[in-house]
Every structure is written in C-alpha cells, then in structure tokens.
Length: 367
Image 1 (tube, rainbow, N blue to C red):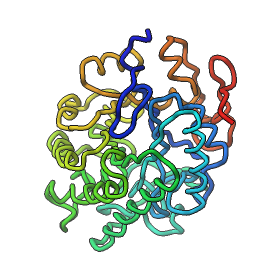
Image 2 (image 1 turned 180 degrees about the vertical axis):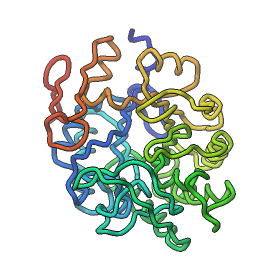
Image 3 (image 1 turned 90 degrees about the vertical axis):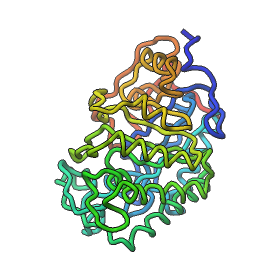
Image 4 (image 1 turned 60 degrees about the vertical axis):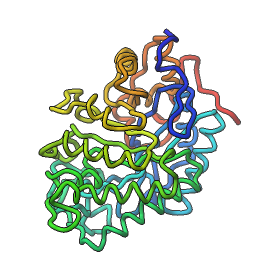
C-alpha cells in the first residue's frame, strides 16, 4: 500500500513536505479566555507531526475576531510565547506547521465582545447559536462595518501574520472559508454594501484581496495558503453566492497574482456532505496556479483517486486526526481508525485531546 502517491514527498511552495497528508484545522476550544493555548497543545500537535503539513486550529487575529469561547489568538506576546512552545515541539519531530488566521465576523455573540455587537459587511443575522462561556446562545444581528474601519482590520491581519512569524510557524493560512468574515464579504448573500467593498464582484473581492496582500507582504507568497468553501452553507445557514463558479473562479484568478503556496478547498458542505451543490471543484482547481489541497470526508481510497487524476496535490484530514495521532501510519498500513466521542471534541483539558495512544501505545516525542 506504500506505493500510494499520498505518501510521497511534495514541495509545497517553499516548504518540502514528507508526504501529501495535511492535518486540517480543528477547533478544539482548549485555550484560555485571553486566547492563550495550553502547555499540552505542544504535545497534541507534536504527536501529529508525521503529517506532511499541520494547519493549526483557527486562530483569532484580534479580540474583535473572536466568535467562539476558548479559542486561541495570535496578537499578544503571551499568545506568541505559547505558540512558540507548539512550533518548537512540532519542529523537533520533523514536522511542518502553518497558522490559520481567522476573523469570525457575524458568527459571534456580544458576550464575547464585552456586550458590543459582532461586526460584518452587512447587518444580516445568521441562523444558529454561538458558543460562549455561558453556553450556546442565539446569534444576533451584527453591526455593519463602516468603510473607514476596514483598513484597520487589514492591519490586524498584517500584525497577526508578523506574530505568527515570531511564533516560529512555517507559514500561514488565510481563513477565507466557512462563512466567516472574508467569505461574508465575498458572497452576495451576506454582502449588501453599497460602498467600495460591496455591490460588484470587484468590490466584494476588494477586502479579501487587501488581506492577502498584507499577509504576503509579511511572509511572501510561497509561505501563504488560503482556505475557501464555495459550496458550504454552515455555519449560519448561509446561502451560497448567486454565481459561485463565477465568483470563486474570479477570486482564484486574482489570487494567482500573489504566488500563493496553496488553496485549501472544502468540497461540499463542511462536516456534513460531499454533495458538490452545483460547484465544479476540478474546474476551480484548474483556475489556480498553486498547489490544491482537497478537503472534506476524504478516505485513503478517495485521496489516492483524486491525486492520481490530478484533481488535487494534497489531501487534508480533520476529525480522523483527533483520536489517531499516528493517522499517517494507519492510513499507510490500512489499520483501523479509532473514533473520538463528540464530548471530547470541544472544551476540556488534556483528556480526549493529547492523551490518545498510537497503535503501539503512547506516542513518544523528542525531549
């Protein structure tokens, strides 16, 4: 089974990878209220460093960016110091890791902002509930950002990208998926603005592209990836763009100018279905000149198939990594996968997080 292309080395932008398996970002809600990852996060990520690339859990670029309790940040010295422990541990195992830069926009709640409303391109209320320190609470109608507020958020991304470099990451992934702030600007279903950031597709692309420009000015394109999700409706029961192929195809065309390391595409509805929902993912892949990471409910067999067909360069796996720190070895040998009860997915401490054994017992790490 080792002849699979999934286990071959790959040059991703400026990064040489040991295989084509990517650990997808997984929100696990173990950080402090100040957005500081716990010490045992270093063990959790290092145990999974056999992946060709680890993408960190979604990480807030600022206090304003928070949409879920107990999620990490990357804007303060304490956060940087905590992430340094993580990157040192991953590198000691020969791994590669990028940080995912996140702003949740309207998918948030006033309890996470001292009573202030979440911000968004337009004052459109999402469906569903927000995870706060007081438990799940209904989403509210967000406040539409003023035009002159948007450049400051671009600078928050720039600052977060610099902090990620200081923290020792190998690059960053811009989170432009799952109906968070950047995708809220992109889709005409969530962006009804009439200023230079709304209306035409050119205007709706403006803010996401300003963010990518700021981040690549810090890192260079060869160390920056981007995540998209043209076919997902969650969270928020968010309608698709009226012309997803035209909108996302044009977005990828514009992103090509930055020489990005990769696009990380959620194919179908996040965590729910691989139904393409009218999206031609191979056609989108052909629009992008960098590497393509495919994601969403992939198996070893499907991963082999899409890579062999040229429809992906790498494949990311998310939830299987929760209870299988040695997922790469299990996929390579055909060994059964352990399953993590949902009660361990979010919140808590090291139990159900950094204490999962490999097939041969506890995962041994470098001192």
